[in-house]
Image (cartoon, rainbow, N blue to C red; front, side, top):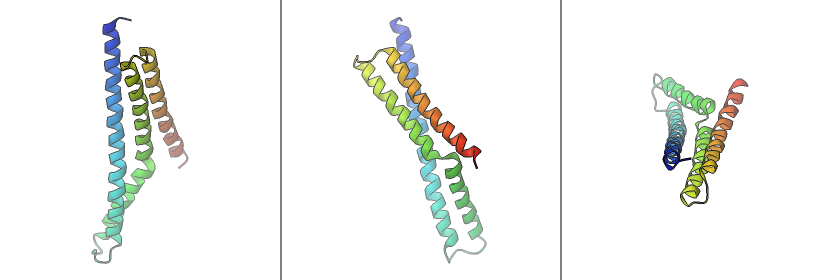
Length: 130
């Protein structure tokens, strides 16, 4: 394999590494946003000083937030992406240190994709049982 094509492959892999971190951040943000917003909306809906007209909207917002957490399971998705990101990051560092060759880095991509795929499959199985 020529140096140029190998550099191109590593650049593509680095792009995937960065994308996985971005997906991790997105799913972690979704988890925390839905959790905090859901808990806050639930608290406001249950508060005695909330007018009767507003309480059902806060209750619905809370239900929606917790439904998203339960259905989309952003925490599991975030964990899958961060696991893949860490695996690939280690492989890239070892490649840069001369301890891994390109095939070992590609194998790390495969392991990362498998981790993400396992999380997706688990979520699909959970969704089909509900």
